[in-house]
Each structure stands twice: as structure tokens, then as C-alpha cells.
Length: 175
Image (cartoon, rainbow, N blue to C red):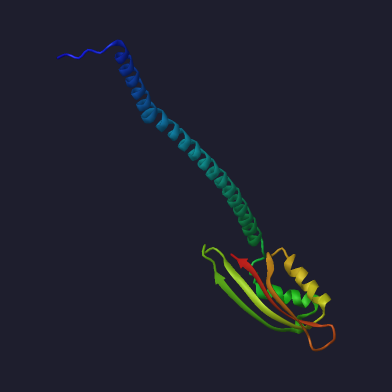
């Protein structure tokens, strides 16, 4: 027994087959293609942000390298035999507060790069006038020798009136 389909049934089967082909092509070709395009766009956005961050980090790194090179060139221009201890002692003599220095404790720490060391002097100055201390600190901080005050503690001195005691930590790098 042979079944024959009439025209209407043939059209219905053809339309169903076309719909199935259309559904399969949309589901397995177009949707994955659109998903991949969206993933690629998101990936491009992420990569662009990463590139922007890398460019920012590179400019910061270049600035640090430039400052480092500038500092090393200034350090190399110091007079031979420069020591932080003698610099601070000599400066105190010039300002006129050498006799007010209670103690000076030098120390040094080699840095990780091995080419420099951090030289530190902790010093206590007693019964100094604020004007003398500020003159001393100004000369320390504006020195061509790249010396800076890392920490400072001030307290009121017992005598004379208006005087202060100061404990300073002064440091510099040495080659």
C-alpha cells in the first residue's frame, strides 16, 4: 500500500522542513556567531583597558627611573668622602647650635640593589630656639647633597623659656 500525499500535505511537509532548517541554522550558526562577536567585543574592551593601564604604569615607571637617574647623578657629584654625620655636624657649627647637640647616632643600611646604602643619623638637640632650628632644618633640606629629615619630634624645653628640644632622624643615600 502506497501512501500518496496530496498537494496541501506536501506543502505542509515542505514548510515544516523549511522551518526546521531555519531553526537549526539560527540555533547552530547565527546565535553562536552573535555570541562570539559579543565575547570578542568584551575581550577587546578588556584588552584596551589593560593597554591603558600598562601605558599609565610605563609613564610612572619612566618618571621613577628619571628621578632615580637624576638622584644618582646628584649623588655622584658630592664631594669625595661625604658622610652624613660630618655634614650635619659641620652644618650645626655653621648655624651655631653645635653645643646644643646632646647626641648623634649614625647608622647605615645597604639597599636591595646593592649599589647604594641608606645612611641615617638620629640626633637630639636640646634647648634650641625655634629660629635656630628652622634655619638648621632649612639648610638640611635644601642642601645639594640630597639630605632630608625623615622624622622629627619636638617638645618644650625646661630652660630657657621659649626653647624646644628636638629629636631628628636625617637620612640620605650614599653610593
